[in-house]
Image (cartoon, rainbow, N blue to C red; front, top):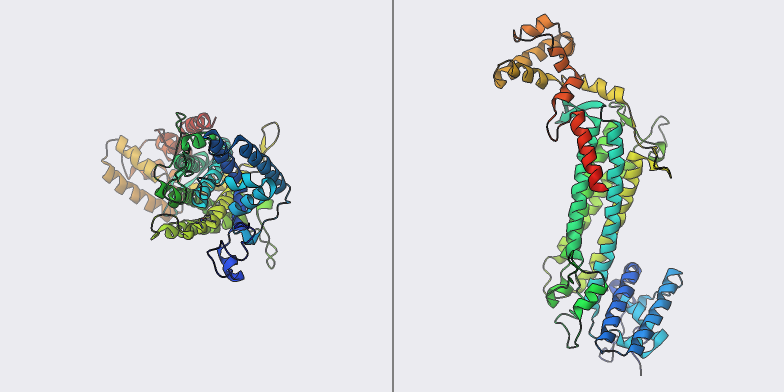
Amino acid sequence: MTNQFDKKSQAWSALFSEPMSDLVKRYTASVFFDKRLWDADITGSLAHAEMLAAQGIISAQDHADIQRGMAQIRASIEAGAFDWQLDLEDVHLNIEARLTQLVGDAGKRLHTGRSRNDQVATDVRLWLRGEIDAISGLLAELQRSMLDVAEKNIDVILPGFTHLQVAQPVSFGHHMLAYVEMFARDAERLADVRKRVNRLPLGSAALAGTSYPLDRERVARSLGMVDEHGQAQVCQNSLDGVSDRDFAIEFTAAASLCMVHISRLSEELILWMSQNFGFIKIADRFTTGSSIMPQKKNPDVPELARGKTGRVVGHLMGLITLMKGQPLAYNKDNQEDKEPLFDTVDTLKDTLRIFAEMVGGQVDASGQRSGGITVNAQAMEQAALKGYATATDLADYMVKKGLPFRDAHEAVAHAVKTAQAQGVDLSELPLATLQTFHPQIQADVFEVLSLRGSLNARNTLGGTAPAQVAAQIARHRARLD
Ligand code: ARG
């Protein structure tokens, strides 16, 4: 008796009359990338076997043999000793064939009531769930690192920009918190995606369900595929369960947004560390020199992160296009979901890790941070003094003295013109000059025209006043604890 595995290099079964060519074998095989799913594959198989035994579909002895064989396979993969074979196409057939070698007929019974279609969908979901949890942890780390930087720099003032033109002074802590907000939403999105990833396709079999009396909810519970009430989460339609990859697309969309946020931060870091800004420095280990210009220190890490954003967004486009036009149910197209998904996870994890350290530095055993970005508070403040950043404050001051806002806006435009002509800041104009723009301007205007006065004035929820920034930091810390 031959089985499909030892004859695989020639044909699938008695039905085939000629062997697969080497090129087709290579073209259709996935083992060299999907072997990464081995842990999920074994975990899923063990849960399936346990249920088959509990339902009396296989014997207790078969179940024990499967457990023993899988333990051996696990150990050999972990030791790097497993012999992955291209001839066996993918991770599933490689592991099953080895199991059968090790434990005989029990190995051949594992696939009862199962297809590789529901098997692979289950494996990808299990694997992705673990990665989402890891990414959520890294996102929390990055947020903590940025909160520390924010806290240290609540009172540091830099120009806030609109259209990259100096607009109004803001706290550097406030600026950092804008990114914390973005990363917090990224974490929320991932948590939401996780709910839909964490559902069980197994039991859908090839596409139509199975004639064996499977207990799908038992398998779901043993794999931790439960909702917050402990309710088993099972794909409710077999055709859908084996075929849709929307969960992978959703994940990649969430990952893309997170990379877009990283990319915006990268762009700012790159600008800020340029000679023209001189706002910050990042540690030398995140920069490289130039092979021709000895004076250069290039911000390679943020530049690469900005570039890798394109790669992740590309994976999103790849996956969404992969799905489009596929008829129900499973199609081999879906094998192409893996590499983009794997690369998305790897890219995002590395990027989050490196950013947490580049921005916030390393945390030592005593919880002290060191080695993050160095902030040049003086350069930031100097820049904020340049572009008439407190012009809005002067207009607001006039409004408080009774002038309608539009008139105040116009009066301040004249004041800025005058200051520009003299090459000075608004706060450097004599009181008498300022009074020519509005007679009720008093000496207290100079407090309003100062950067700190401007900051302190914006003391409403979400504003840049140091008191607001401190309150937000406390809120985020409580959320992350
Ligand atoms: N390697 C395949 C994949 O990644 C496993 C499922 C194969 N199913 C099939 N009917 N050929 O999708």
